[in-house]
Length: 163
Length: 412
Ligand SMILES: Cc1ncc(COP(=O)(O)O)c(C=O)c1O
Image (cartoon, rainbow over all chains, first blue to last red; front, side):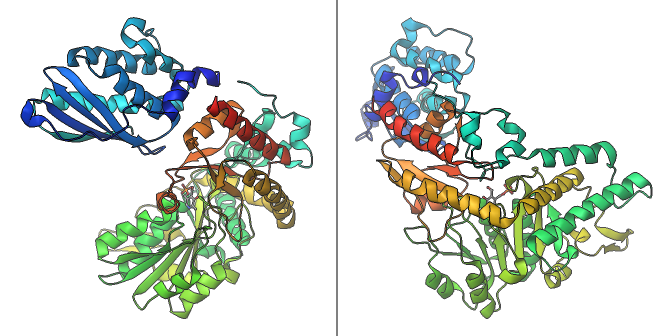
């Protein structure tokens, strides 16, 4: 078993205990040209659960937030996702998402520090196979949000399940 | 983070059973997940290997010596299960894949033909999904209703409510002997008597009971009793249904195929008598032999020694766990068997499990296939430490000390 400190780095513990952007998203701005989406993610195995909210305008993620409850890895991953991606271009996000999932699932490609920045603290999770889904659940949920964004400005909702 | 492993000497002090189990060749292993599946002693592994090597063939078929030996071993295992449950006759024991399949058998073969709209099945809030979902399925098909007897904040069944829910429409009652999520031991005899007073048959899910306490189905007077081999130090893929003969005789087969018939023609097929009527297809022959060996192993140790050992561990563990700051025991039942479920303030059960795993302590974190129980206690999941024959006070010490260290780790 790898060192626990590789899994629970200080930043992870901090975000796990004090998640950022944990709130429902307020009134929808769809009529004013934004695309508002939310998606649910659920891991029935351990009960990690979230609703991820996004407001996109002119290809920019104007706001990202979540509601949900789960383990430290899941909470930190969700919190840091919202922090890292808010204000970014949708087109940029796809690359980050792919890199993040790649870092945790393939374990071969070294994380690109430029692109992933602080998110690289999750690289240790790949040595704890039972915990990978905790870290990836919000990202899988985001994946579905991006699909919805592609479908244009309408309020949509969906469901990601980490089964 | 590595911590000093429990030395072999301390681990085995006062408990020679540990040496019976090859998995403890890893001296640092603290296995506290027997409620999910128990480890197997060498005698079980050896019995299965020897059977496969010297006596294996299909059963009830060949006239050659090997097949006769295999049949004798398989039927011998049935006799051991009968003895273990104190049933009246071997023919009241049906081999199944496990507790789950046994419940499904009763749901499909016994309950379904007897149910219609307005009828009710009564279960409790303590059940494992295996004793919920099969009933929901037959209810959905027949228009019957599933009723649920509540539990109190300690995790004990509310017996008055249970009695009140037993109505004129109740067709079957099903409940766990021991709860896998809380450790609660239900008053089976009283519950059965209440149901029988209203003429309602009773199924008892004994999956978590059989490893911890002696079971006498005639004394309990239940109509059905189910359990799994793998929680009883035996292999997976084998378990048993006990049913009173009068029921088995009246029940139609559930699955069709070979081995469950007397004769087949395209016009008319005549079923074999129970239990073979319910054992369609080639069964888990070697698994049955392994289960028989596990029963022999437990019988040789004897219930007084088994229960004394486990009561000692429970009495040793409970106050120490309860004294850990921020630890809340989920379930503090009047009578407990074999396990402790708990949550830690501010630390998710999944993180608890990972932290303990780093210390080579195996526990289960999750909803334990008992989501209604989790919901009742307002938690998404718990950490569960469950005990077996091989556990020692040193295992409890290792758990308690790790939990104390864990608080510092996550507070850092
Ligand atoms: C109380 C209870 N009932 C039923 C089952 C189902 O047993 P199996 O999965 O072996 O069929 C379990 C297993 O966890 C259990 O604990």
